[in-house]
Image 1 (cartoon, rainbow, N blue to C red):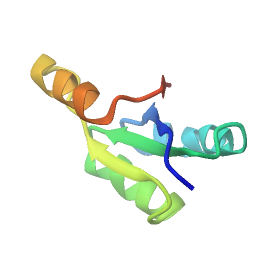
Image 2: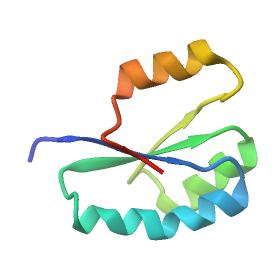
Image 3: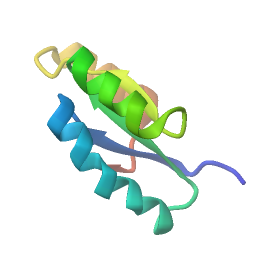
Image 4: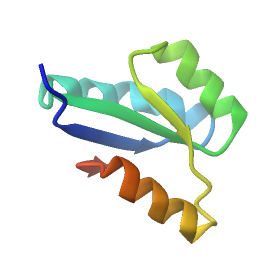
Length: 82
């Protein structure tokens, strides 16, 4: 089955990443989309690895650098952002 796009969820640290467990339920509504978690801390990234393993994409995204945000949006083109 072909990927339709990305569903991006901002998950800065451990708590935000735990919240994304409910976001991952969107897969039932968007089965052709890949879940993409953005992190700004190693703790959040580690929590994402523990919760999801390889079933989601994870990237660091520093929100205080506009060039990084523009590059992220240009590369991934998320269909939905949370």
